[in-house]
Amino acid sequence: FYFYSAPPSFKEEMLRGKRVIVTGASSGIGEQMAYHLARMETHLLLTARTEAKLQKVVEQCLELGAASARYISGSMEDPSFPEVVVREAENTWGGLDMLILNHIGHSTFNYFDGNVGHIRKLLETNFLSYVAMTTSALPMLKESEGSIVVVSSLAGKVGSPFAASYSATKFALDGFFSSLRHEFIMDKVNVSITLCILGYINTESAVRAISHVIRDKPAPKEECALEIVKAGFLRQRELHYPPWVVGTAVLLRDIAPEFLDSSIRSSYRVENLKRT
Ligand SMILES: NC(=O)C1=CN([C@@H]2O[C@H](COP(=O)(O)OP(=O)(O)OC[C@H]3O[C@@H](n4cnc5c(N)ncnc54)[C@H](OP(=O)(O)O)[C@@H]3O)[C@@H](O)[C@H]2O)C=CC1
Ligand SMILES: C[C@H](CCC(=O)NCC(=O)O)[C@H]1CC[C@H]2[C@@H]3C(=O)C[C@@H]4C[C@H](O)CC[C@]4(C)[C@H]3CC[C@]12C
Image (cartoon, rainbow, N blue to C red; front, side, top):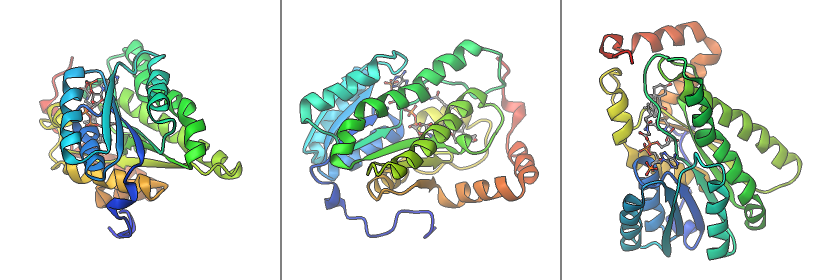
């Protein structure tokens, strides 16, 4: 646990006054990150598609102590939207300290049905929009020597059944951002990249999608969100959460891949899956 969690030197005051964008902030882990950041008195720009939900999250953030909180609604399936969000931050704050990329488009948990069009759309939302936001935000992040936080998944490190399209988009994030991290270091760009490798978390949409198929108990979204914020601020290379589950799977992938694959397959209640 010690090796995989953020070191205890983190103090909430360290984030006071920082300017942070959180995507996918209308629900789940993104919403919880917004609440933690609000308590830490940051300036927040939240985004997702559903305006009514974002409005409520912003109100709650202001009550919790955010230095300021606003939202911009839109879909990351629209290739022009990532830049719109970053411009909003630039026009409002004139700079940016942390970019938290967390949103995902809808996917089902089931056998791959051959729908290539769906993968194309999902790549736009789950991967290309992350690249586009990073590209637009980079001048501001270079200026502030800020941080990029990429929320990924165990499905982006280890193949598992019923999540082929989703998993492809998460592997793409690792490839792109791990390569970019090298370039930043070689080019002396002081912008950190934190890749967050998450296991099963108890958000409404995840539980709805898989609780009938997976026996495991999901980890709490509140703690997960706090670990992400801490890891990003501490400029950690990767976060593994929950540390034991993710750490073990990543280790087994390299030393005993066949064993890992067979234990993944045996953890599913396939009989509960309705083929679509
Ligand atoms: N929960 C889990 O078990 C795990 C989650 N993760 C990762 O954590 C992150 C958050 O997941 P989680 O909190 O469970 O997800 P949720 O479904 O709770 O939240 C997804 C967020 O993305 C937004 N969103 C959905 N579609 C779009 C779109 N087209 N454009 C812009 N925003 C969109 C949603 O808001 P709206 O619908 O209003 O647009 C919502 O705010 C994801 O990156 C996920 O891959 C990783 C491993 C496990
Ligand atoms: C199927 C879930 C996505 C639901 C969705 O579309 N939400 C957005 C919306 O409704 O608009 C998947 C989201 C997170 C996945 C889980 C994950 O990433 C961790 C594990 C990785 C492992 O390789 C497979 C099992 C996971 C628990 C995985 C299962 C599918 C998700 C819940």
